[in-house]
Amino acid sequence: MFSWLRKNPSKKLQKDYEATLEKAMHAQRRGDIKTYSLLTEQAEKIRAEIDAASSTSA
Image (cartoon, rainbow, N blue to C red; front, top):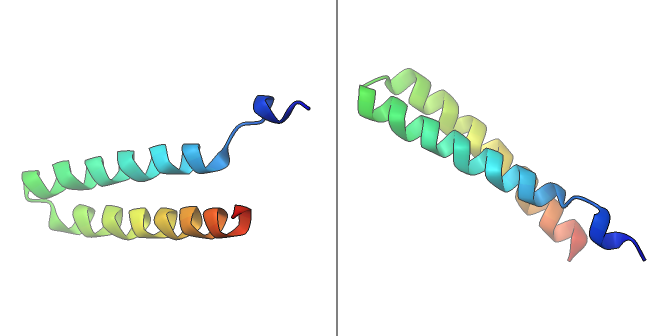
């Protein structure tokens, strides 16, 4: 009945994923390749969580 009140965790993960990719892009443009690679790795982990959450709910 109140399912519309529950937050969708995949939306938060998607926001985190996009923000991390944007930070990685800016790091790459600054020439900070080490930070870029760390942020890209972090974004890949978030993407895996999103995929796991979507496969569980589907």
